[in-house]
Picture 1 (cartoon, rainbow, N blue to C red):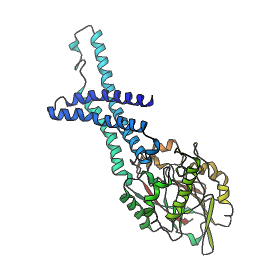
Picture 2: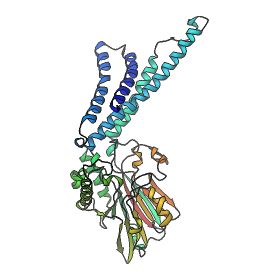
Picture 3: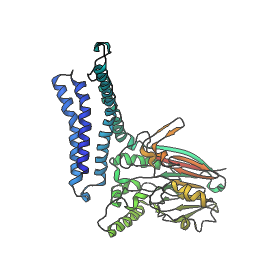
Picture 4: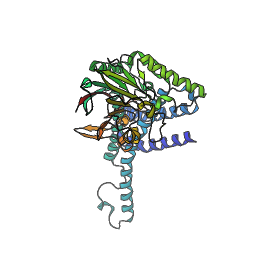
Length: 411
């Protein structure tokens, strides 16, 4: 029934939009007219074939990457066509008004300006142009935006930062989502950008994979290049537990998580699971706390900050790695006011937005109070990384993947 609904919906949208194609192409030569009109239906057929393949194929034989590409293709095609539908609806509305006026107007029909019933060629062209713009933007976001890595540098001032840690640089990467990658060379380039910054510490704040630990196997030799003098520390994100995949057995899911933990070890990451690690310099101590995913908005809460925090009283500064930024308001600021800086990811900045001259907007802000960048309340700070990878839509529009360099300075 679901398949039938989508096929009918797609065909109705296409038949409606095809009227604009007929109108715009009527002045072309026979060859180009055929190319345009027959070519219009090729994406439709591909989308319908993909739907049938998705419906009647064993779900265990469809990779996560293939599912992403199918969803992206369907969304890009028909979301774009809805823009055309909007313009054509305006055209049909004015045609209906004119037809009614002609039917009830007592004087000469010639007194009405313009043609009474014919479809507007201008609005037909506008409809097709409006459809092409979002489709083109999404295509550009895949081709260029997916791996357009940006290094964001900023300074965070901490009143109680010891002199021995003054000026320490922290590199942050988040939301790798290795199962979504399609350009290994570009990913290597992003990792090299982080390495070239030579941070003292590197933090990875969760979501190494989409669902399965096997997704990262081909990228072990890429991300194991992330090295720092004081170490590389990591935590898990909501996608790392395999909660969004149908497993044949519970044992298979548990083994997958064990494999994910092993992947962190092979990468050279010190995985903190509701634990902490002390770094000592010049007699001063800095605590790195890391918890398992603790999510708001219905996401799983595996994290136990009380366990990670226990035994850190002697640290002059405490840094927390927690994947979901919702955790900051929900627990950290309420109950752990001695945590100086928290680092998170999770939101991806929705992989879509605008950031220009101090102006920042993304649909992500309607779901998360803290969704990208630095936030400060009293003497506590939170930094939300926009993500290194991508999920679902394999691209980014106006919200490029991020490599963060945070320098800690004494107040």
